[in-house]
Image (cartoon, rainbow, N blue to C red; front, side):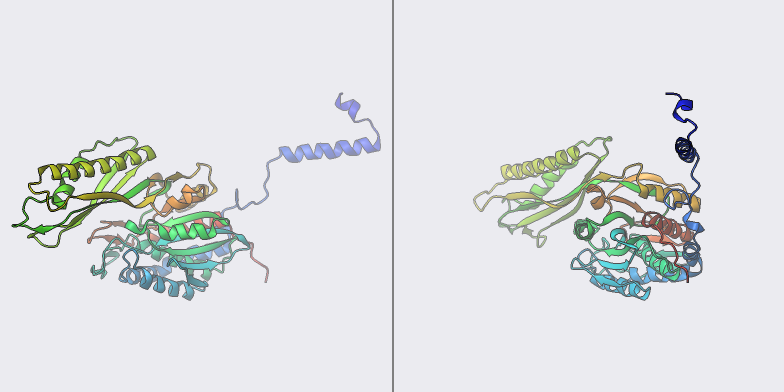
Length: 436
């Protein structure tokens, strides 16, 4: 049917045709309506501008809090004192704050939509054992101390963001939780983030992790890993009178040598690390047990399984070789086992994720370019469960992570703080300011 026939010159049909044409023109024309999620820049909001402008004149305060937090020891499973300090600082910023049963500190910035939550988190714990000297030495913008960058810089950034949004009276669309979480390092097995995801799973829309320094990367791919402990035990005895009896340390060494000769592929990238060896009571005693802690990581779950099996086979072979070479087996034999200490699941953020888009927009604003990386962080947990998550550095620069010579330089940290804030607000949204 032709257009001319369809639109006969009757008043009713003419009116319908006008409406249809208007609808066609409207659908074809580009939309210029302001839509925060797609077009309007967050930085156009005067309150967002105020929050961004807060950082530069307050950098000394941020640096001081970083030094203060770093000097509070926080080995894994012993983060309570540091958690209490962070809770106090969040409360001083005006956020209702509490410590959950796992030990996480949680400060809440309530949004218009309380049924949807965005988490911004920084882990509180360090890899250093009790008794480590964590006094901060300062030389201009450079600070040196164990844990000053990983994760003193992340925690300081978390506190700075909380101060900035409160100073600017920002109200997000989605509720934002500022979290200082426990158990990220070592045998903590991401227990703090696991608890956060378990508690807020049905409401959780995105997680932004602040871990370490820098702005040159964004972790969107979770590196899977497993931590294992091999234990070999025996009767033990005297180094002279019981010479020749099966020795657990000997067996552990034999098995370890076998394991470190295990071939791993370059692609998918796979690694292992013998991180701790313990055993024995004195130099003149045949030990009654020996322990080995091993970290294995891979971009492939199949490779993780293969390496775990290889470790078990090598420890069994080490025990067998030691028993075969023992002169005196009458006083007992060796027992062994390999048990998991922890497992970090893998996962990956979708390339079209709104969270990644928010990060890219923030990068553009601060004039930054960041590469996508695969790593093992708190983001592993939400990513493994299909929840959008990234891990980013908090600005500045650092080095020597996990060493006694760890350092952090705060020069340029404002860019990292602005990047983190805009990423957070890009995914949480900013509510319209009420007229006064």
